[in-house]
Length: 516
Image (cartoon, rainbow, N blue to C red):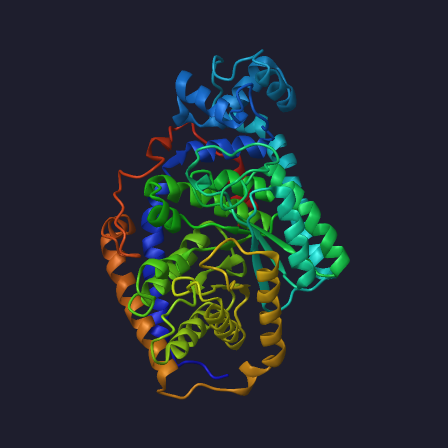
C-alpha cells in the first residue's frame, strides 16, 4: 500500500506544537502533587487494607497528614521520619499504624536527604516486583507471540466471578484482550474500593483483588489456548495513579489512561488530573503497560466529519505528554474511532482515510480503534453490518488494538452470544482479507488521500492555536468535543498540592533514573 502523501512538514510542526503545549503544562505539574499521587506512593510502598469503617488505609494516612500536618511536604518524608523516630521497619510500622498504636505525623521531620536514605532500600525492593511482572509478561509474549491485530472485547457484569466466566469464554472464542469495564461512576470516587466485589452497575469495581482474580484466570486460559490474553482496566478518574500502581503490581497489560477524557467527559478538575496523569504514565512506562487514550469519545458528542481534526490534535498532545512521562511510543495506544454517520456518501472512505492517516503518522504506536456507537440503533442487523465495515477498515489500515463492536451496543450490556458473534465476524474478515492491505493502493488525489490531508491540515492549525493560548485556556474554551471546563472548577481541585522544598517522590526519582 502506498502512502497518503501527507505533508511531512505539517506532521513535524504538529509534533513541535504538541510538545510546546506539553512543556507548558509540565512546568506547572513539576510544582504540584495530589492526594491521589501521595496515596499511590503509599500503595507502592505496600500500604494496603481498610480500617474499621472500610476506609482504605492509604486514604487514612494521607487524610492524617492533611489534617494534622502539612501535606505539601508529601507522604514520603512523614513515612521516613516515622520509621526513623519509632525505629521500625516499614512492615512493622504499617501494622502498628493500622492498629492505631503509633503516629505518622507527631514526629520530628528528617531532612530530605536523610529521608531518601531511609526509604531507598524499600523503594528498590518494591520496584523489583514491578520488574518481575514485566519480565513475566515478556516471557509469556515470547512463548505465545502476539497477532498483528489483537481482538479486544469487554466484560461488564458487576460480579468479578461472573466476569471471569465471561472472559474465559471470550478468550476461548478467539479474543486476545479482555477489558473489565468499571462500575458506573467509579471514576468520580476519591478512593479505591477494597477486596473482591460482586455488585456493580454497568461494570465491575476496579480493585486490586479483582485485578488479581482476573489476572490469575487469564493466565490459566492463556496456557490452555497457547495465546497470551491481555488484561485491561481503567485508570482515568480521581484515582488514576493509584489504579496504575495496582495494575503494575498485579500485571495488567493495558490501561485506559487519559486526563483529557476525565476533564471533558467526567468534569474532573484539569489541574488535578494532569498531575495524576503524569505519575500514572511514569508507572506505566516502568511497568511496560500500554496506555489507551480516549479521543474516540470526542466523536460521540461532536460530528465525526467536521471535528475529526480534534482527534488527531489530541493524539499529538497525548503523544507529547506520554513522552514527558518517558513512555515509549510502542506503549502509546492512541485512540480513534469509526463514528461517521453511515448514511453519508463515501463515509467508509472517510473512515479509512482517518484510520490510515493515524497509522502512517504514528507507525510505532499500537493504535486502539473503537467501533461505531453513536449511529448504532436498536436495529441489530444494521449494527452488524456497520461493525463488519469497521472490521474491514481495521484490517485494511493495519490497526493494532481492535475493540470489537457488538450488534446490541444500543440495547444492553452484551450477552455471551453477542460477544461470540462479534469475534466470529472479526475472524472471518481477518481471514478473507488477510492480504488486502498489500494488494491495493490509494488513488493519488482521490477521496481518501484528500480527506487525510485535509484533516491533518486542520489539526496542524488547531495545535498552532493551542500552543499560543495554552491547553488550560483551550479546555476552558471547549476546543475538544465542544465542552467547556473551568480551570478552577470540576471535581478534585481540593486534592491538588503545591510542593514544599522538603517534598520528594522516591518512586518517581528512581523510575526516571532507570528509564533515562
